[in-house]
Length: 422
Image 1 (tube, one colour):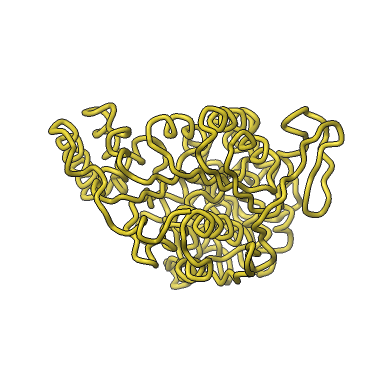
Image 2 (cartoon, rainbow, N blue to C red):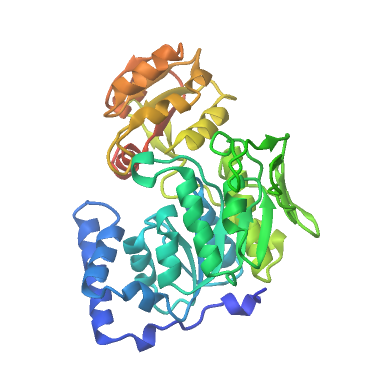
């Protein structure tokens, strides 16, 4: 366990960088600035790409001399990363992090390049890139949340990612891991690690965990755990456990009083709090207090003013598990809903996942099918018996609906909505 002083501001490797690397960092920052000024986006990806083009080994170089924590999951990794960073900053630690959600090598290089003197880094990593980043960046801790289907045309099946993560733990068994015991794919992937802190987060989405990752037999699921009837694989005992609105630790129960909405963010917070409390010498209550005021993460849950003066809340949903959690959260309200879906590379070009989302939960409320794939959404809603209107423009669709409005958007639609002036 690290002490508080270990995460206080301190020197990383900024003072020993070569002239080539310094030029690459400066050029990358300039490219990012130009992108922001031109209104082309946050500038993070172009910044990192310039850095990598000028110094291909820059990720290894800017990652050296730091205490690097890598966070990955299909859903929730951006929020978990931000919650961990906020908890550590609340005790005075200086933290480098890719807070915009740019989680591939270019984004990670840009995040580290912005803060060459910062000793502690909490880094979100795309699931596919975990093996590469662990190879390049000295890793002090892995924080792994969940695995489910996400853009099968880009990622492949869930099991393929689990195999890659297991290979990482086999090759680097000494790296400590904080892992979600409630996800069979995660439990199997991290089993070779020698130092695992388990946290039971619950498994509201089980559709991608029907079979044993060890022997492929059908798993037996109870209310809150799983086991394989054919082999010895079963849910690990967890010292930390999410229990309603609280996290049960080995010593006390900590209430999770979050400004962020939804049961899924309780899961993100429980994972973040477990990682901070178990790995760093920080009071769990102090860490929970440090993350409690966070209201928005990279535009998620932001509220915007429509042309008619009403407000609309914008939510991101990228895959069946994420969409399902958002729809369940909305079920307690009578909010009108715009479903804005694109199918660009960053969304996944295959929209067949629409049929794995329980849109039937929207029956009886005002709904609009929107985005570039509005007609695909409309067909899915029709099959589900959900009355709806069709309008490809999410803002126009929102104005057409009555009362409070939530716009649930796929990645590229969400990015467009949160960056534009309403």
